[in-house]
Image (tube, rainbow, N blue to C red):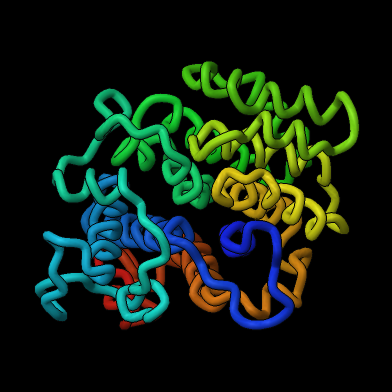
Length: 318
């Protein structure tokens, strides 16, 4: 979320005032909401299709955004859960055309039959949190995007998953690049050249611009990985984010860099002066804590145990 907000500044971070999210950051919040709701549903009904629950969460985002064809009809007959009541998530912060178009078509894509033809960066940036959950980020990307964007999302989620279990950052990226399997084409366009460039010399803005020339998902992954490979340390997070934000790709590379660095080093490594101004800091922190709580404790209970939080299913209806 911090990378997303720094990306919105174009790398020129104002000295004061809030740091607002973009539509990518908003959608990332709804991705996590859908994952939690999927786990709740599985606990209570025994079966669940996580991409369907994430799809429904994206529909909730579209409704509070005022996207034509989606109507907020009130409790019990429209978007539900606590996230739809966060005012900042209803603010228009740029477009997400491929996501909106897929939602309006009302046709969920799959890995075998993706929705639409877009290879844009939102397929990656909004699905990075899926690496913390036991399913594939590529499945969530394919709901609305296609081609190497789906592969980039799969690779990004795999890197996050390794970082979350303690693998060193550059080692995690290298491991995913060498074991990319069905996403080998996306890896050859993003992870491999990024690691090669980072090993060949110091951080270069010219090299960053070459790796991340546009708003495609593979460009965002390449630029973000290059930035963190050049500045992998806990003490250089600020430098990494500012460097990634200079890519000129619309802020997508720095969103990736922020996600990878945050996963690798934890929130305490993030610059406090920026973090304290982050518009969705409380929202993101609450979602992060809640996804851990759901996966480990299941507060809404289940078939064989009583709930510890009677309001959990109101927060995350499954």
